[in-house]
Image (cartoon, rainbow, N blue to C red; front, side, top):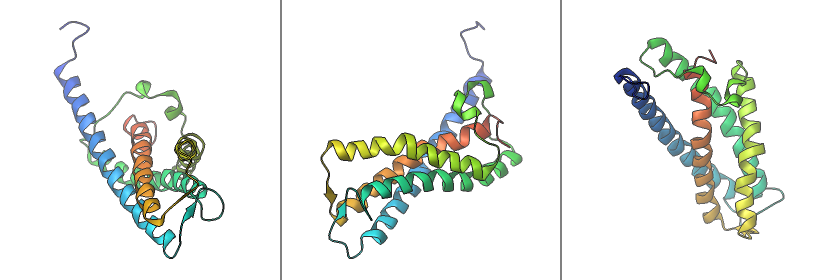
Length: 174
């Protein structure tokens, strides 16, 4: 076998990790999207429109959603994945293959969730808000807000899931 060829075990492990991560990301997107729709509906009951900024506005909602999904996803998946790792059969990845910021996440689950939430508020939320701003969105109808909240809830799930899982699969977080 040449240096450029991967061993059958490495290929199998890579496919196993890819399948695992794909499944987890899809499930997270569906769950977070559904909760986004549900909470969007709860927020806009009896409202004529949702403003871009101000009380009850899109800006506050996107920032709060970023923080809460980062925090709650971390708090929920950490004990679940710990249990699955203890039972065995989970894919492993090399700690050296993690992007540097993921290797710096705190071991403490609550702190790590807080860091993830703050990261979402600082990095991801501005991109989403920038899209609203770029399209000139001054307000949304309640119906549009509900569905759009579901979409960015799902998007946050897609982004946060690998960030929460990969350091644990690499053994960086116990």
